[in-house]
Structures are given as C-alpha cells and as structure tokens.
Amino acid sequence: MNQVVVDALHKQLAEAGKLTFAEFMATALYHPTAGYYNRAEMTIGEGGDFYTSPMVHPIFGACIARQVHQFWVALGKPSPFLVLEMGAGVGQLAVDLLQTVREANQEFWAALTYGIVEQGAQLRERQRERLEARDLLKKVNWYDSLDEVPGAGELVGVVLTNELFDALPVHRLGKSGDGYVEYYVAADGERFVEAEGPLSDPALVELVDEATRAQFADGERFAVCPAAVDVIRAMGNLLLRGFVLTIDYGDLAPDVHFQHKRADGVRGFYYQKLTEPLERPGEQDLTADVDFSLLVRSGESVGLTEVGFTTQMNLLGGNGILQKAHELRNKRFDLMADAEMHRMLTLFLPQSLGDVFKVLIQAKGIQTAGLAERLNALRFKLEE
Image 1 (cartoon, rainbow, N blue to C red):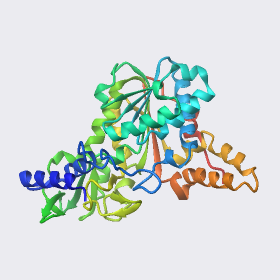
Image 2 (image 1 turned 60 degrees about the vertical axis):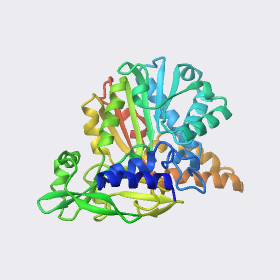
Image 3 (image 1 turned 135 degrees about the vertical axis):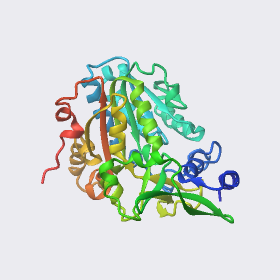
Image 4 (image 1 turned 180 degrees about the vertical axis):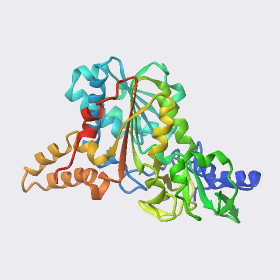
C-alpha cells in the first residue's frame, strides 16, 4: 500500500466529503513525492505495470525521427528547430530519435534542439541517465511545465507526445434521464468507493460534442478531460510555426465514447493486468481513452489546424518500419533477427499495437492545403 497517497486522499476526503475522480487521479498519479509517476520505485518497462512503444524497439524512435525531419523540411528547414517532448517517460524516445538524427543527417542535427517537459524528479533522473549513456545529454533541456519553455509564441518546431493525454485527470460522468450525473470518490472506512452526485461543473458535459451527447442513452457512462483542453491550447500558444504530433490511446468522437459498452474508458494497470481504478492508489497506473475530437476542437482556438488523423501502423509504415523488417527477414535462420522482427511487428500490426494507438497531426503557421498528401504518416496504405 502507498500509505502516503492513501493518507493524502483520506485527508482530502475528510475536508471535502467527496472528490471528483479527476482530483483522486491527480493525487494518485502526481502527488509530489509519492504519486505513481513521482515515486522512486515506479515500475515502467519489462516486469513493470506497463510499457510504452519506444521501449519495445528502437525503430519506433527512428520512425518518429524520420517524420519529424519531414516536418522540418515542410517548414523550410528552420534553424533553430525545437522538438519538445511532453512526458518523456524513461527517455527512450528521446534517445532513439536523437541518435537517429545524429547518425543520419548532420544538417538537421545542427538545427535541432530538444526539450523535455517533465515535473517528476525520478523520471528526470532516469531520462538523464539514458541520454548521458549515449552522449546526448548536452542536446537536451528540461522544463517543469510548458509555462517554463522560453520563447512562447515565437517557437518553430514540433511538440511531441506519446501516451501523455491518457494520463491526464478525467471526470467520470453519466447520462441520467434528461440530465447528467458525476461519479465521485468517497470513503467507506479505509476503502475508496464510487458515489453518484450532481455535476461538479455543468460545463463538463460540453467537452463532448453535441452530436455525440444526443446519442447517449440513459445510464451511459463517459469520461471528460478538461486538462486536455488546457494542455493542447498551451502547446499551440508556444508555437509560431510548427506541428503538434500526438500518439495515444483513444479515438475520435463519437466512437471513443461508445466502444466500452457502458463503461467509460478509464482503466487501472498493475503489473500489466487490468485493475479497478480505485484500487491501489499511488501503486498502479491510471489511464483514460483520449477524445481526439476534443483536441482538434480545442486546438483550433489557438491556431492549430488538423492535418490528419491516423494510426500508429500508418505512422510507422510510412516512415520505414517495413523496410527494416524486410532486412531482418532476409537473415534466415538468425533467431535474434526473428525476435527483433517480432518486437517491431508488435508496434506495427493492426491486431497488436498498430491500431490501438492513434495519431493526430496538427499544424500552425503553415499552409495545410495538400499537406496531408505529402506527409509520410498520412500517405501510407497497407497493401491488401
């Protein structure tokens, strides 16, 4: 049991009586010293609670590097060119992207600067260790928040996230007759339990588009993420010209709200097994499916235009993963090559991670007419 987080939650409940799930999730994941992402013993990767695509195979970061290079070219090869990664996990994507650029293109390497937005001290240290081991530490700057990134509104580059938005705190709501209810967290002795009540903010339901709301049946549950609105707008406000590349669980509306058969897309993960979200606060990961339509609508208010929405399979397929797989395939009777190809195809195949993760590309300060047809991630089609 993570007693520090449990005690913090019980203290909040003693003062407030009940917490929104967003408040519960924020404390469970982001308590400054003991939250899931800030604790010293956080378990990410093999044998841990979850792993991310960059940890499966370096080809993921190499493909992202190729797509980011194409963004740079589309913007006219500016220098400096910032790649800003939010929530970099253990730093594997940064390592693989930077190493790929350094080895492949010296002109791009000279122009590129890399920033990581990371508030967790433990994660920062793990990121530094990985980057230092590859002699990449001098290329990277760290920031606690987007507000700390210098040059806001004048930056040219790419804001990149991989599994960030799914970890932002969400409110859990439900349709009830002609109105809506919210599902709070309350205490039942030492246990945390769900408690139904009126909306903490009537505007929460407006985060779901009107057409989707019209389809909700009585008893339908859904999750909304006001924090996602703030984050995508802050990303857009940083850029003068550039792209926002988002890779995450989820889908567009209305599908994202109806694919769980009266569940709401909120999940707990403990040693890679699904768990109840109210169990083990501070010890397990909590995630929620991302409403990419909300990111599109919110981004438009700060000048971000949707260029395209696709899958991880198409992002990787358009940026060279199949060529690498073909090289490995030709190494017959090489068991190590077989194992490596299996890991790569786990990232790509639609029945694996290829369709699970979705990709949104937004742009600002660049002509978007015809742009989708030129971008690798949006041009790829898997041959029948």
